[in-house]
Structure formats: C-alpha cells, structure tokens
Length: 277
Image 1 (cartoon, rainbow, N blue to C red):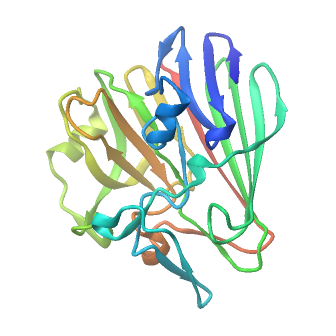
Image 2: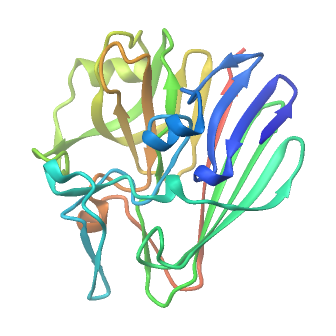
C-alpha cells in the first residue's frame, strides 16, 4: 500500500510485519528498499523499517518471567542466540486505511512471542514527515517483558550524527555485560556528525537526546527507547542501520532498558522522520 501527503510517500507491506519498505521525500529515497517481496523474505531485517521483538540477541534463547521459563528458537547457532524475533515476518490485519494513514493490528497468541499481546500500529504522513506509533497491550496473565526495536535501514548519506550516551561493553557473543567502555574518537564524532561512508559500524549505546540525522533527514524516537544499535555489514554496503531499542542486547536476561508491562496495561512507542530544510 502507498501513503501520500505533501511531498512525502511511504510504502507499507502489512504481510511483512507492517514494514515501511520505502519512504520518499520529493522523490528521494530515504530507506534501503527491497526490489521484491522475495528479496525482503530472504533478509527481512535489513530493508525498510522492520519491527523487532525481542530486539537484538537473547542468550541461549531463554528467559524467565515470574519464575516461569520461556524459550525462543536458536536462529544464530554460531553464538547460540536468538536474534531479532519473528515480528518482522508476521501478517497484520488492516483496521483503517486512508490516503495518508494506516492502522493495523496483530493479535499475538504466542505465535511470534511466547507471551500474548495485542499490537496496534498507526502510521501517518503530514507536512512534518512520517509518524509511527506502536501500542502494545498485555493480554496475558503475566508481566509482558518488552525488548522492542526497529532495525531501521537507511540509505548511506554523506552525513550522520546520532545523539549517543555511554557505549555498552559486549562480550564475544555481542551480549551486553552491564559495563561501559571509555569514550573514543568515534563516540565523540557521532554526536557532532561526520561522513560515515567507508565506515564499518557495530556499536551499542545508551540513547542520548533520542535524535539522529541521516543526510538531510532527522530521526526522532520516543523517550521509552533506551538504546541505539548502529550497524552495517561492511564499509561498501551502501546502507547503515540506526536502530532504536527498548532494551540492550540480551535485555530479557540482564534487564537493561527492559520495559515490563503488567497484565491489562499498555505502552506506546513512537518515531518521526522529518526533512531538515
């Protein structure tokens, strides 16, 4: 489906986790867009704005809530981890579609995560840019631990700045240890802004002011996102991922940034992409 407003155009695929696979301003592509559904199906986390639950890695695919043990499939066997979840592959049901907005729902009965929830997503365009809201309602009887994020994949631009806080120390499996690393030149440069082309990224930070700039586009996220993951697969990949997350890597076990939603309660995350004139 295509949403349009002013100079903005967004393409959303409900059957692929409500992924916004393309976002354009004045016909300039902002995201790394797949050329076909088959391409996205092969690599669902490196195109567009895919949803992650649980975000990043969960050690040994295990976690517990209120003394109950839960298991996730090991889909990164080299590190014996579960990574990214399957929300990005889930089919959503449309509730409302307008020229400039869409609302859709996913009822998870433990198919995409082993605890139930209802996720309502609302996307809309206006003259200020592209808005996304993600409302999780806990429909189960236990607390719902949320390590939610977006694996946001942007076209490589000649300028990048990300408001970062402390850099996370990670072990050999890229899991957060609970410690932090000393600030280095890259950390200081990120907040000021630089040309990232030719740079390899694989970093995890606490969020600073919850704002990033990619070229002439600003990416703002709500205050309940706690961390940034910055990643690309290589210096010549042509894209990089600026990923807001509620929770550090392995948050389901270490609790860093994790949001626990009591039964019957809801929590809403939001993002906004705008053009800097």
